[in-house]
Amino acid sequence: DIQLTQSPSFLSASVGDRVTITCRASQGISSYLAWYQQKPGKAPKLLIYAASTLQSGVPSRFSGSGSGTEFTLTISSLQPEDFATYYCQQLTSYPYTFGQGTKLEIK
Amino acid sequence: EVQLVESGGGLVQPGGSLRLSCAASGFTFSTYDMHWVRLVTGKGLEWVSGIGTTGNTYYPGSVKGRFTISRENAKNSLYLQMNSLRAGDTAVYYCAREARTRTSNYYSYYMDVWGKGTTVTVSS
Image (tube, rainbow over all chains, first blue to last red; front, top):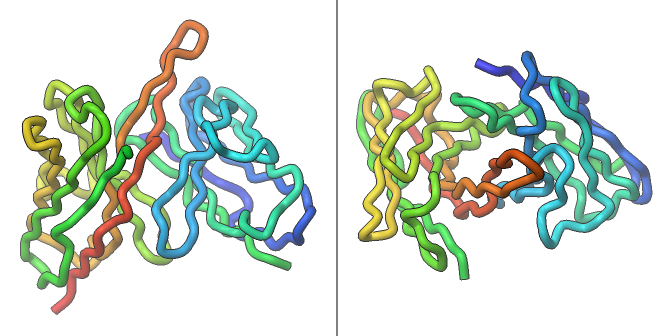
């Protein structure tokens, strides 16, 4: 199975900060990586697919990059509504797997 | 409106069974692969099962042999039969649609539509 490791697991930041979350895969997954945002009591929301393609309707302050085994999600200027938990997911082969999540909290 | 609505969650004793349902609307259900994903408190998201348009099914080792995913295209419905339930299966269960987009010379896959979830609690 392909393991995904996110870092950091917890991140404390302020409104307006630029933040980066990393997702590392245990083997190469080309660009078959998606990023999701989840808020308490809500369903996950797709942000990025194919490692760097912004889903329709998602603000442009979100961006993704990487291929192979290392990927990043960047939020260029944090807004109050961005404080949530973020997950990466590989869809290159079954079983599909998620990273353990990164909880982004207000400093 | 594209929508997925889960139902069937509840409290069940260890070793018991439960069947979840997911009603799809607003899109051609039969043309999409579908999945179940769960959120375990304190552990994060876990992919639970997937089913292709032709009925091929996929599971992680943690549920293989205990869970069965199925679909009924005529009813635009997805199901998850869960047997031999354990405390570790306690979670919010979501159904999700897998979309695919052609990107240059290959397809990209992602889960673009999710239901609001149904809660399963396994406890005596």
